[in-house]
Structures are given as structure tokens and as C-alpha cells.
Amino acid sequence: MLDKLRQIFLHKQLRNRLLFVAVVLVLTRVLAHVPIPEVDLDQVKNFFEQSQVFGLVNLFTGGGLSNFSIAMMGLGPYITAAIIIQLLTYSLPKLEQLQKEGGEAGRKKISQYTRLLTVPLAALQAVAMVNLLQSQSLGGAPIVGGFGIEQWLLVIITMTAGTMLLMWLGELITENGVGNGISLIIFTGIVAGLPTALGQSFSASLGGTTTLQIVLLGSIALATVAAITFITEGTRNIPVTYARRQSGLRAGAEQRAHIPLKVNQAGVIPIIFAISVVLLPGLFSEFFKNSANPQVAEAARTVGSIFATTKPWYWVLYFLLVIGFTYFYTSVTFNPKNIAENIQKQGGFVPGVRPGTETENYFRHILNRITLAGGVFLGLVAILPYLTQFAVKDVQTLTIGGTSILIVISVVIETMKQINAQLLMRRYDRYQDL
Image (tube, rainbow, N blue to C red; front, side, top):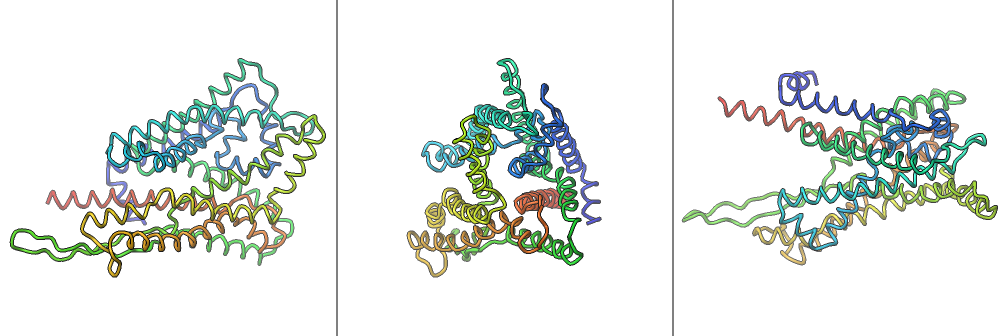
């Protein structure tokens, strides 16, 4: 590790890139603490500390939501826009053609569509979020007071601008730094909330937690990190053989390669989809439970109790949704037919499998099997807090979820790969100079 750090320090370009990333990430944390005016921040923070549903949403904004900051929505609207555009790319022929045949210009155009879609999504989410918070109260006092037209415009424009600013900073990191800027900003938000989350979990566990339970919790944490790392890096390599190529009077040898199919092909996207769906009943319940209509209020409270995070069926539904979205997202983003056609066009074949339809069916069969394993893994990661509380009795609060750990580990692995690639490139450059 020390040798790796020394190489990074001696690599001027890489060192400057990492310093640039650090400065921009610090700036994003500053934005998460710049509050929107006309709001009682103490009241908002107390509310988020007492609400499990809103506390979970606040975790993914890096605390920006509880601070009612200009970056309170985080990169949620941008991620939603990116997912929508990605799904449309695989369903609309024009967008699919633009992505495949447009080259760099096509990719830039799709990125521009994503940015443009982010603006209305951010504005809509700002309106919905403020409305939701205005419907909440703590100790009889509203969390956020009523706004006039000018205040509404100010809040919506400020929140939308905050999301667009974070998006711009993320793209700056991607272009001038190391790693994916959007992922690094989300990673920083999660890591920034870890000290508070650890403190809350430790304080809540001090009452009756034994030494054995603490050791068990630590073992579960280490096993989770090891399992996530193993599955994230796990691949199923499909061997492919390419026919001999004739070069003049000489015939070349057969070329052998492999196509790696990742066990976790969908990444963290299915969890994001699933948590968006499973939180909706609780959020609607919070919105309508203070309704002036007693029937509506009672129905909202009933729905809230049914979908409470302490109920087993909440976690069962969450688990099943993650598996379902894993199959859905993998089927949309990975097309075995295209892979089989590309292999056949390049004169290749999978040993023991005929080119064409049989190769397509072979890839689909393998993909279904590893997708099941990946989906079950993601589902277990998603419901890790419930499993931990079930395994370790008397631990009622666990604010650090498996989803956060999955995001952190994935971003760290991807960033380290890019740093290693930069160092390897520098080594090749030195050999060429010699």
C-alpha cells in the first residue's frame, strides 16, 4: 500500500487529478450544509431523527435533506433521468441507433438529453418534497411553514439549481479527475453520514448489548464486506474461439478469448428501483395521516402501520422486488441476441454450441442462472438491517444498511481500478521512453 501511495505521489498528473477530486468533493459537502432560508432547521433535524422512513431517504442525500440545504435532493433527479433515458435507449430504435452508431457525438447527445430531462424532474421532486414536509408536524408544530408564491419560486429554483450544480460537479470529476463523478459524490454523502450513523447505532445498543452480540455484529459486518466484494468482482467467463485468419500464404492460429458475464450484472440499480416502490406507501401515509378528513387519516395510518419497516412482510416485499427488478433491468440492458450476432459476424463461436440461435439461447440460459444468484444476493444485501436485528437480539436500531455498503465498496473498487490503470499507463510510457 505504501508503495502504491508513493507511486501516486510521484505521478504528477494522477496526483493533480486526485487533488482536484478531493477539492470538488469537499465543495459538495459544503453545499450540503448551505440551508435554504425561511426554514427552522432545528425543527427539521429533530423530525428526521425521529422518522425511520425519512431518515432512510436522508441517508442517500448525505444529510442534505435534514439540513434543508440547496443540495437537499442530491443527485436523485439526475439518476432517475439517467435510468429513464437508458431504458428508452433500449426501447426506442432511434435512440438505440444513436448510441450504437453515433460514436462519441451520439453519447454526448444522449448525455445532453439526460441533463435536459433532469431539470423538470428536479422541479417536480422539489414541489413534491416541500409539500410532503409541509404536511408533517412535530409536537403539534409544522416542520415547514406555508410559503407564498415568491417563496415557492425561490425554493423550487434553488433546489433545482442545487441538483444541477451537483450534476455539473460530478461531470467535472469524471472529465478532469479519477473515477465516476456521480458515484463519488453519492459515495461521499454516504461516508459523511457514517460517523453519525455509527454513533446512533452504538448509543441505541449500549442499553442491553452484550460482548458476544458486539462480536457477532462485527463478524456480520466483515462477512458482508467480504461477500459484497466477492460478488461484485465475480464473473462467469464464456469461452469464445475465433476461426483462423488467412494472411497471404500463411494461416494464422485460432484465437481464443472469453466474454465475462458479471454475477451482479445490474449493479445497485434494482435496489434503487425497489426502495423507491417500497417507500411509496409509507411516504403517502406520512402525507395524508394529518388530513382533515378522519376516514382518509385513518386509512393513511393503517397503510403506514402495514408497511412499517418493523414488519416482516415489508422486508419480504422488498426482497422480492429487488429480485424482480434485477431480472427486469438485466433483460433490458443485456441482449443475448446482439452478443450472438456480433460473435458470428467476427467469425467466432462458443465451443460445443452452434452459432446463431443456439448461441443466443446458451447466453440467455447462463444469464438467467447468474441473474438469479445476483438477484438473491442483492435482495439479501437490501434486507441486511432486518436480518441483523433478527440474528442479534435486543439491537433495535441499525442505521447502516447493506445498500450503503454495496455502493461504497463498488465505488472504491471502480476508483482503484482506474488509479491502477493510470499507474500502469505511466509504466508503459517509461518503457517506451527507454
